[in-house]
Amino acid sequence: MTMNDWARFAVFVQESRKEPGCYGDFVREATTRQIRTDRRFVPSYHGYGYFTWVDSAQIPGTYAAIGYGGQTIIWNTKNDKFFIAFSTNAIMPELHGMAKLWFERN
Image 1 (tube, rainbow, N blue to C red):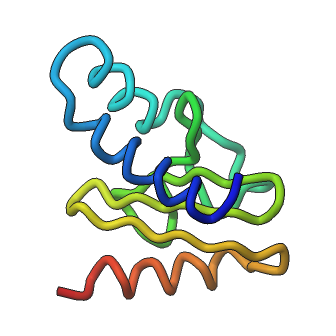
Image 2 (image 1 turned 120 degrees about the vertical axis):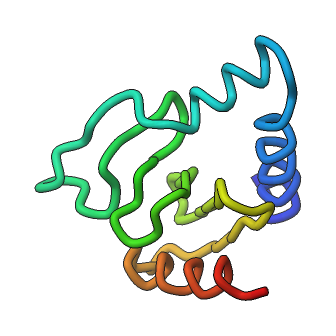
């Protein structure tokens, strides 16, 4: 997907979490922990939802989609912000640090 597609997807997921009913319930559940991860192998996240990494050790209250080619979307559940990065050389703790700064900014 292109950067524009990832941005549209980020907005779509964010808005879908707000939907009432079965579909909204599914998306909300999909973005919460369903499976606990082994921190030895996935140190940045405590768990995995249906389609997203959840329970970030560095930025609580977020969930993330991480693409095979280095694309990352991190959504904040406490506000309507999300953070998108494209990098095949990204180091997750560094991305999380930038996302945290963005989420905390007014």
